[in-house]
Image (tube, rainbow, N blue to C red; front, side, top):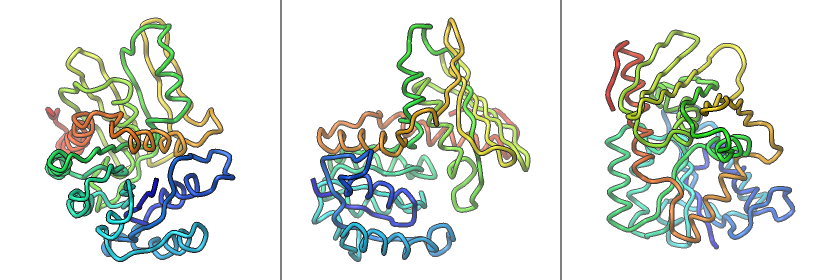
Length: 297
C-alpha cells in the first residue's frame, strides 16, 4: 500500500515512517510504505515551522520519500493518508483539500481545536465516504490495553488519568497535551459524558467529567514535577494501576497497527461520535478552567 503524509512538523512523521519503511526495525509495521509527503508548517507556531525542514530532509534522505508541494499531490499518488500536521487549526482546511480523493485518512491529535471544525471534517468525510480515524497513541499503549481487556474484576466504574500538560497559545488549553489523558478517559469509559468542571493554576489542572450513568472520570495535568503518563482504572473488585511504559513495544507501533487495519478494511475502530465528544469535552474543560463553572457538553 502506498501511503502519503501531510505535515512534517511533528516527531510522529519520522517515527511512523521508520516503522513502516524499515523492515529491519524491531517493531516494523508491514503492509504499506510512505512514498510521498507534503511538509506543511504553520508560520505562527514555532514548534511547527522550526521542525519542518529537518523532518522533510530526514524522510527524503533516509527513507526515499518524495517531497511534494501540496496535499492534493500526496492524495493523487497514494492509497491512504497520514495527516500529521502538529497544528490542529489546519486540519479542517487540509482535509477538505484531500477528501474528494476518497482515501482513508488518519488525522493525528488534536483532530481539531473546536467542535465546529470537528463537525466540518466529519461532514466532509461523510460526503465523500472517507474512512477517518483520529486519536492519541496512548489509547493503544500495551499496558493500558492490557488493563482494559482484563475484565475479571468487573466493569470499569471510573478512571483517574494523569500526565504532563504543557500549554501552547495556538492550541487552546487541553488540546495540546491534555488530549492524551482525555483519550485514555474515553477509551475506558466510552461516550456519554454530560458535564465537566475544571480547576487550574499555573502548575496544575484537574478536570472532572460526569458520565450519564454516574461514573466519574478525572484528568490531572502537571506542568511541575514528573512528566509521566498513567492512570488508575477502577473496577468493582479492584483498582488497577496502569503503567503505560510497562511494555517495550512503543505505543506508536501499536497505534500504527490499528491505523493500517483501518486503511485496509475501511472500518475505523473509533466511532466518529466519540472523536467529536472528545473535542467537545476539551472545549468544555477549557471553558470551565477559565470560568470556574460546571460546563455541559
